[in-house]
Image 1: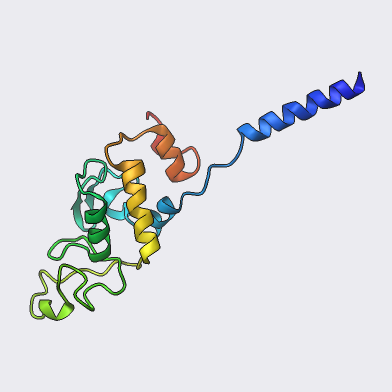
Image 2 (image 1 turned 90 degrees about the vertical axis):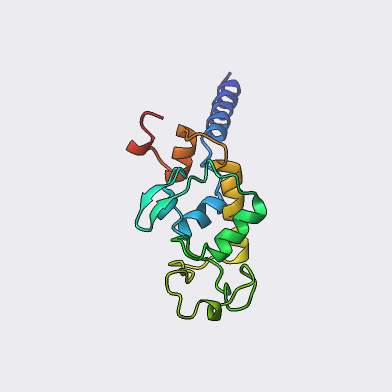
Length: 157
């Protein structure tokens, strides 16, 4: 009888520990945060007003993988979208242009991001946008994933 009770307790513990595993680490979300993408595109990815003006919604973007990769790496000259590739505009990898092409044109000169992202991080951000944001509605599950814990931002979702 005692063995039966011990086995029963072990089974309950195994089931409860399997159901309470911590959320899986998301490298794309981590890179999104490292790049401070939410500074403009917000935590929810819907965009809106920010310190650089009104950012576009990553949930509604029609950009494909290649276009997203290029814009994150190279930014958008003449806008407030900064470039995250440390080597952008040193050579002509970004739209066939170099920094020298913007001499005397401070209005259109590409903006430098606050922190650079390497190729793997840029690809992770692109995957995060495509898998978690693009075409999706903001949900409570996504909110909890972003913040890693319950928060008032997730109330009402």
